[in-house]
Length: 143
Picture 1 (tube, rainbow, N blue to C red):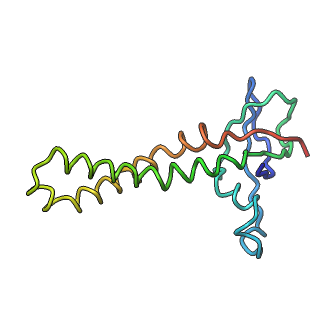
Picture 2: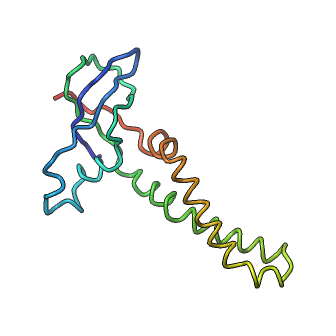
């Protein structure tokens, strides 16, 4: 599990609003590429967000927030494999259903357009896809 320290900013019914505490030392550390905390700080937003919690917490408490590291593979599939699959599927369907003259002239533009469109959709939906489905943060413990 990837963990990071956060601070509680608000407490509501069943939810705790937290803000990630970015460590200034993360940028200069030699282990930055293999560190779980640095990886987690990239995924957690730099603004406050709600996490479901049944723990009794107060505003100002520091907590450990964790994300299951097995979801990193799922996000890699979404971010890298999905655009390529959409591009190849679109090109395959175009060669089947469109006339050969059109395919010869426009197939490279079509494939690049599908690839970029998929990246754009993933970018626009990244908060929903990653934060709510793939990386649902949970409070591991209170510091």
